[in-house]
Length: 115
Image (cartoon, rainbow, N blue to C red; front, side, top):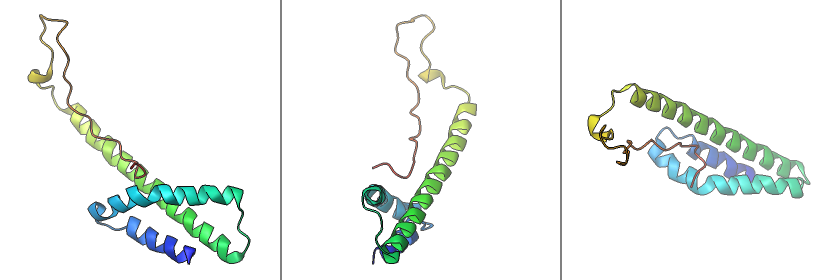
């Protein structure tokens, strides 16, 4: 049963519509990680349990790949933003060195595992 659940999670996490899959990733990925951490304390006692752990590892590998993909996309977005000329409204006045510096917000780093 656990192996089938992991397979279902894998298909949901890999869904092409990120707006659909992201809430599931945020909600369920920490549970998957905790389940796999528990394997360190309680080793699989049967081939069926081992299969479930292997399926869980596939899910975790997918989450890591999705996180890396998001970081790559985020880096591309960030480099595009950095290549834009600065907005004079956001720059501090030259005559007042105590004026607060207002920078544009940075896009969040999405790892796919954050809640």
